[in-house]
Every structure is written in C-alpha cells, then in structure tokens.
Image 1 (tube, rainbow, N blue to C red):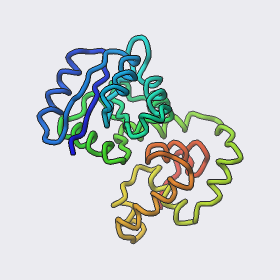
Image 2: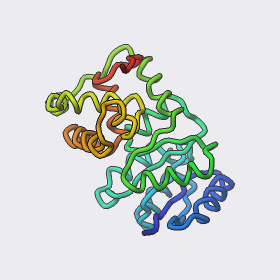
Image 3: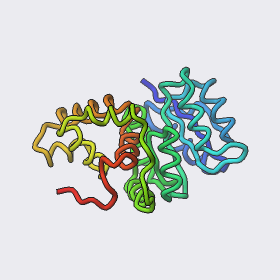
Image 4: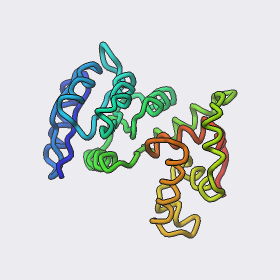
Length: 227
C-alpha cells in the first residue's frame, strides 16, 4: 500500500528536496505541499495523507498549532505527524510532542533516515531522533516541579504492573523494543506487547506521547540512570 505524504514547510527548496527523495521511493507518494500551517490543516483534510512532514516555524500558523488541529480532528484520526525542524531544542520538542506529533527529526536528516522515519510513523510507531530525545530530557531537567496530574490520569498510572512500569522507564530512556527485550530477557514480541499495554492503560496514542507522560508524571526522573 502506498504511503501518502503531505509536505508542510515555508521554504520551497526544502519541500522540493524532500519531494525528490520521497517520490523516488517505491510505495511512497507526495500528495500535497503546504507553505503555512493553515494550508497544512486544510490539505490534510483534502489529500487524506497518511503522514504529514511538518515544519515548526511557518507563517500564519506554526507547525505545533497545525499539528494540534490535525490530531484533534476525528476525521483525521489516522494521520501521523512527523516534525522536521532546524530547531532541535527542548521547548520545540515538548510542544510538538504534546500537540500530538509522532516523531521529531532535524532537517539535516539523511535521505535514507527520512524515508525510514516516514515508513515508521506510517506503520503507527513513534520516532524520536537521539537529539530530540536528549532535548526532551533536558527540557524536563530544567523544570523545578512537575505539573499536577488529573485524578483520572493518576488512576490509570496506578493500573500499571511492575513490568509495565519498568518497560515505560526504558522507553523513556530511548530504548527500542529490541533493546528492551535484550535488557529484560524477553522476546521482542513480549516487549512490544508490554509497551502496547502500557500505552493502552495510560491512554496515549503512541510511543512519543508515552515518553512525555513518563517524564511529566514522574514515572521516570530526569537524570535517573537505568541499571
């Protein structure tokens, strides 16, 4: 099945470069280009794209707000957002992920990595570059206090088993399912199942949202070392 991609960036050359890379790949098709966040929201509705490559800084409406609006639209429930930006700092990482982005990459990403990223988020997985994961942790390190958690969210966290909580901590430290499986002496399928169950219990849409919640609610502490 062909992965339909929408490009949202105010720089024509950036869009053109991404289009050449993606259209050259079997099973990937660029179905639209947007110059502003508002155009991205509208084209997400009309093109029925599977993945939106979303710049953060755009005129009229930034990529974070555009992401928020797409994620909130029930008719666009299957659309995944992959944020691409030259500004890999903590604020942008947190804002994009909280808005519902499923991945975060720098614009200097290698072509092969860009294609893999699109394929990853199209398959329903989340993707965080090492730089973005580091920036996310750094952002929370600078927070003196965690935000108060709603009672319903605390109740969901309390339903995690010890193994699920352990897996959430490892996900928050950037480990893949395969790395989690190796560390915990599990099969990759079992590790994936634990991650999925934790996401279901916590009501998060993907792995990226799981990382945000883990730090925001103190399931894992910034700077904490994993054994």
